[in-house]
Length: 343
Ligand code: ADP
Ligand code: MG
Image (cartoon, rainbow, N blue to C red; front, side, top):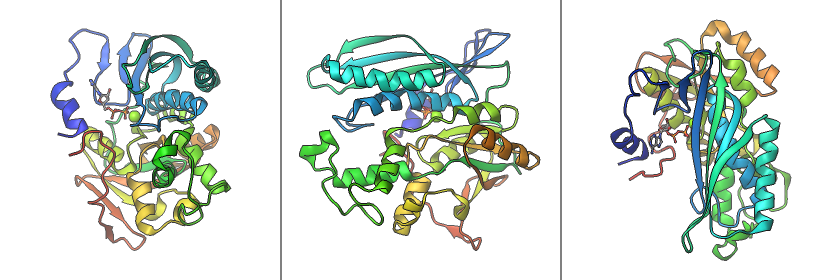
């Protein structure tokens, strides 16, 4: 049983009638209807050894723990308001705590998002460091974006570039000696084409993995413009799958249009394709909009300071077809998205 089947089978129920929950399980954020405004809520957990290497740099970790939550608010087009922090710590290491909180609160301040509560416990002996953040955002009533709503004929768009975070993770995994994993020491100079220890390209892709920038400003500008939206956390094709499923549509993706960095383009084709189409941790937004909105979407991207790229279209035929520059179908059967419980 995969992660999403597990959630669907055991944890998905319709919201109670007459309650405040306008949108429940199945989207980037749940939505509470307060009448004159909507609240968007999301929770995301980072577990040591699962989402980050043991000994990961604490300031970046603090940033990322909040960033992945703000990314879900961005996908809902919600303005961040406050968040809650639950921590299970192996020990109270003040140097670690100072750096972690500095990284987290700097991002919070940049988005005017208040740390409003949480919970702190010691993890059991040898237990992993676990960070769980719940974030709350706000939209005007009815304005929250969702994964449902893509219409046949809509354009498919993505922000920024995809695949660098996955490339960084692959290279770190292969280069980190087990004994030095804690320090994330790059103990090899053979990290793949264009990637050498101590060079700028490697630093840049590591930034994408360690310090993702949630696309909050873009999400806000996509309200009323995008017909559906999701953040790319588990891989482009998998997250597009969530839009397709929730919207009841199919999609056609143009591989040549998928935005990727020169560093990723320099990798062997199968690495490039795997990272861009199935790599996780990009925290870009993937969204759909009517063709009549093309100029408006470009304007929204420019105003938000992030590139937006048209990468395909929504179709009536179910499924997702990935096409090369000559219109031939690319076989993506082997490109699975991230799933915590994949068989
Ligand atoms: P995201 O990647 O945007 O954080 P996920 O893929 O983790 O979203 O989760 C998919 C949906 O399932 C979300 O709506 C999330 O709130 C919901 N969900 C995940 N785990 C649980 C759970 N244990 N109980 C209820 N809902 C859950
Ligand atoms: Mg999400």
